[in-house]
Image 1 (cartoon, one colour):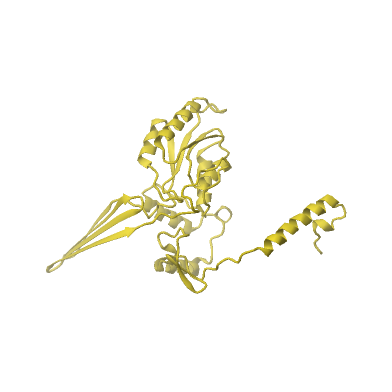
Image 2 (image 1 turned 45 degrees about the vertical axis):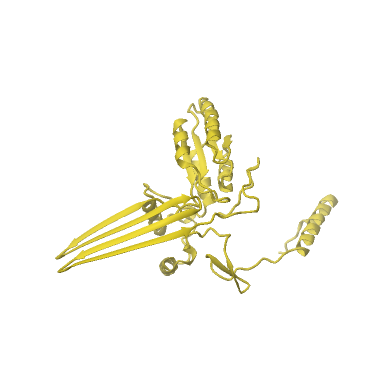
Amino acid sequence: MVPIGICDLPHASTAGMATTAKLWSRLSAAQAKKTTPRVVNSSQGARLTIGGKDYLNFCSSHYLGFAEEPRLKQAAQKAIEVHGLGTGYRTLSGTHQLHVDLEAAIAKFKGTEAAVCFTSAYAANASAVQTLLGKEDIVVSDQLNHASIIDAVKVAGVQNKFRYDHSDMGDLEKQLKAANELQKTPKKNGEHPLILVITDGVFSMDGDLAKLPKIVELAKKYDALTMVDDAHGEGVLGAVRVRVRLGLGRGSARCALTLRLTLRLTPTLTLSLSLSLSLSLRLTLSLRLRLSLSLSLTLSRCGRPGGRQPLRAGGRGRHRDR
């Protein structure tokens, strides 16, 4: 069977053919002006190889270096040998043991009851908002939230939306007061609307931090929940963690103390201090002390020139990297 195009159909109108011809004309003109993309020849890391030249990479979300981490490469290779090249779509093929193991590890790391993984942050935000809210519920969103948050609210069909000026806690409280008044009007099912405050943890365009303690305080004050998209902060900004392990065995005692301190000096400057102390006792006493101090400078990523870009009425203006 030979496929036919719209121009080959016997009843295609002259106007329709003219419109189609204009489209092809515009496409041909665009093709003549096309630019050839620069092709990356290396893995995604702090540096890239493009056309045989070495470049610094300032347009990647691989903050933690996972793309080049040798242990992850080995783990991926091992998993491929055992499970093949993929687990299939979870919604179609079902939950795989790899899903269960990954989510258990993430929940342990986050200190939460459970975790669920999605193929992208876009999908995660869309699913979270649709699960928590109905169309008659209420969203209060930072003006410079990531595009995936804006689109998630749209997909959920939430009708009552409030935006507050970026990181302006006074304006947030003003919008929460308005949302709280609206909350007094019951939904069609008789229940009162749920208010959800949504914010980025680290704003991806400017690298500044959400004022989470104050946001949570205000949310509780006005009977609202807080949802944080921390895609650009997880593993980059941390807190104090202390781990103590003590192991006893026959004729020996071991003690290991690991202290890891991350001090956030400014939104772009982090001081990391790690102290490791291990003590082992068998026939003799040996003491080993190791102190290491590292200073790391994290530069905020910038998008298009001009700094912050206000969110337009249509919900655009934020970059889409997820």
